Length: 482
Image 1 (tube, rainbow, N blue to C red):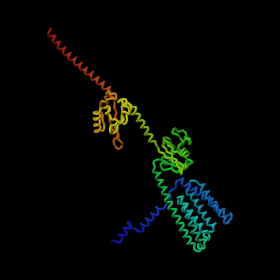
Image 2 (image 1 turned 180 degrees about the vertical axis):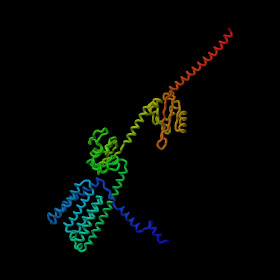
Image 3 (image 1 turned 45 degrees about the vertical axis):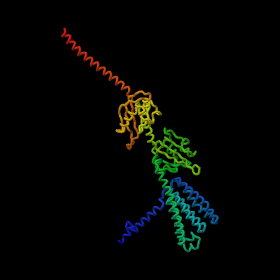
Image 4 (image 1 turned 135 degrees about the vertical axis):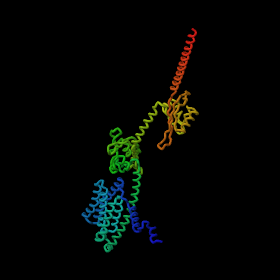
């Protein structure tokens, strides 16, 4: 057996170490979070929570410093770091990475101040690991790596070179590297747990976002202030705005501010506004939405309240562009009116030959109203023999054109010019039959009269010719007799 045979089985590419490293790198890459952005409403809620926690640090740290007897100067410094971070993180808008990074620096600096105020008390170091775990809730690599780097610098550089400023334990002063590695292990455990939770949370949001973006209908969510907190890709495509441009906007002012006739639409009359106040489901059909470029389109909207344990917390709005539907309905109404108002008797039959529709002219021709005709076959007024012949013609050619005799409900005979054709779907499968009848009874009567007059005229001409010939014979006979 060749020496490399077993190797080729284990490593098909022929490079054991390279293949193993590639597989390992791929596994690590798929296990790590992708850094997907959180939905705006989720991110804002978490950010507000962090800001509140920072303000608590701004109060608690100086109180702890004063309790330790470090004086007002240290207390002010301890309060300055979280206060500055909380103010900056709250005042800056629409800069997620900057806001999250400032909050991270505020928390980690608070951890350092907590260690300093406690004279390096070992248990206070766990504040670092708690903060690293919490900051992973931003689901942003920038503040997360910044917090890890801060801890590594604090415990790696500061803890090794100046252990007295970091630890209050004699063993830590004597063996700073050991304690740095111990804290590195704690940090690794905290990071691993954070990354696993981050990845699970990210996948959950990714599946939710994939589901929302796969919808053909536009969808956006509203908070109780009437601001858009999330929107899917279809909403952005239908309105011409990007998802970012839709967020934190009022849909009524941005999209739904005018009625179909162009007049202003008061917000208090808007069903989308009402769902946030009364918590009831509302539907809207035919209202106009305005695109970013100023054009408009008719929509069908469904507004649903969002309730958390019975408390109204927001609403969702799904909407669909119904321009094509309204165009088709307009054409359908037009075609229906044409058929209804036509002078020709028009009827529709199913594939078994039973009536499903007749227009007014057909009802007037045969004398049967809809209740008497629908569900019956043309044998009702054509007779079984004529109907059987009609069915045979349809089965052979799919259509029929000819003249038949039928009887009205009152038994009056009618001569009919009948045309029947098959209607099929786009795939060619037959759907129904359409029959068009024309009453030719009067024409038949006139034709009969014309034929009769033509016969009489022919007889007159024949009699005149015979009389003329007989007169000629009489002239000769009379002449000879004279």
